[in-house]
Length: 301
Image 1: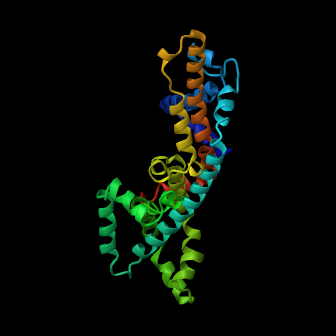
Image 2: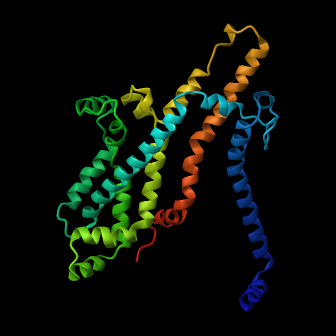
Image 3: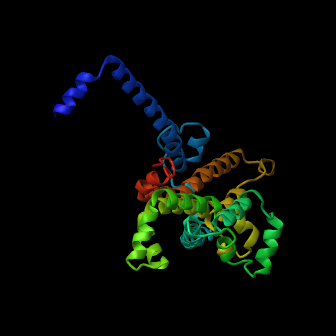
């Protein structure tokens, strides 16, 4: 109570102007970020005529579920949702596991070849074999038209591995390893029982990175999958979006043309909502770890 009174007494007019200015700026930023999201959701629940006439500004106009009914009428949408959830969950687990296993030895001072391996890994960030050699490799390994063609080729991100290695070096004291060895811990026990529980922030960060990458990926599926029953959500939604394109010169009925244009526009917004909401809902669960993780390496001492 006393501290709050002293704070009010110390606040000068310049301080109040500064606080007000900061509040206004952040309010504007929040509006600029939230408005497009609100507009997309509102547009997806509006009618095609209201959307085309520009009546949708903030809230849904002539509320309708037409776009979602049309979208979910495609037989591959729900199976592709299941596939994407499987690809995202399994792929993220593989990514995180391999990243942690690769980063741990590179963070150890007593690993003599860690600098050599870091140079080799860093080179792969700038030089790539290309799409055709990668395609040939996937076919020769027997991964073509299997879910493993989406999960194994990109199982390790060197950037994320360096991120985790930096966290291990800068945030986990080397003396902790020495103390664990004195207590009889081997490397495996130290890794699973001490290092990983202390690394929740960086694990949350790379988990979010990998999960978003898997959820939004469609190009690899377009290259390596031919069975529609294995398509991920993003590829199915892309195909739906392409299938709604049509030539206006082939239709003479003006009302039908307007209805089809409105439906095509509605589908665009519905596709955005369906593909974005699940991954957006994931963020609040890792937010507190994510904020800590993005500060890796920012403070030395």
